Amino acid sequence: MSLLLAEELTLLCLDDETGQALLPHDAVAEAVASALVFELTLRGTLKRSGKRLERDTMVTIRDDLLSDVAERVDGLSVDDAIQTLSRPGTLEALLHRLASVGALTDPDVWAPGHHRPSGPRTDASARARVEEILVHDGEPTQREAVLVSLLEQLGLTIRVLPHADQAQVRARAAEVAGSARPLRNRPATTTPGSLAGHLLDLVLAPGRWLR
Image 1 (tube, rainbow, N blue to C red):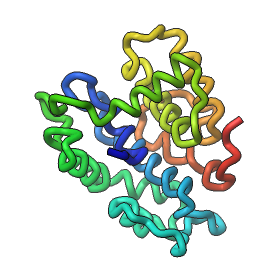
Image 2 (tube, rainbow, N blue to C red):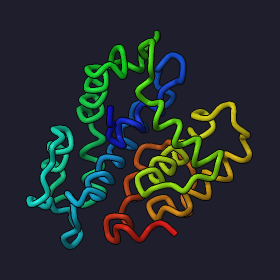
Image 3 (tube, rainbow, N blue to C red):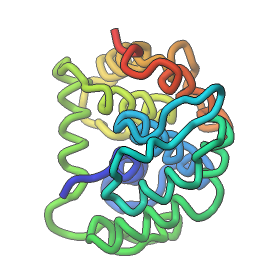
């Protein structure tokens, strides 16, 4: 099953065994909002018009969640778009969607208990690619570099790869994050509001933020 960038990020923000959220709701919600805006810019659905985002109506969106997000942020600045998507509703809709396709047993990942299903894991592919990039020096795509960058910004790279050499993972994650304009020279933090402006360079100059 193909996942959105925001869905991969959400699953990687959960404990590997229990599926409980590793971070506060607001931190995950804002990271997810950033990932959604990035994915829409990468697909060409959102473009810059002055200081605001503009939906390109000529680009077809076949994903209901992305279509709804594009409509909600059309005409907003990047900061306002991410703040809007960070409010209650967007993350909850995404978690319910993950539960509906069997990626989670239930959407309440901040509650005690187990929230991951038994059997094949939906996040296995994303986790394998993160390992390939951070442990085996694989070359990230634009999308993968942002995923790694957001994980690094949230301080989760070590939690995603607990059995890898931590010094190596930290160094490589910093290198990948440093290559992405949205997070260049930004310290890792989980403070709400800290991710809102990090996609601005990407939106203003898409495709030019990797080395």
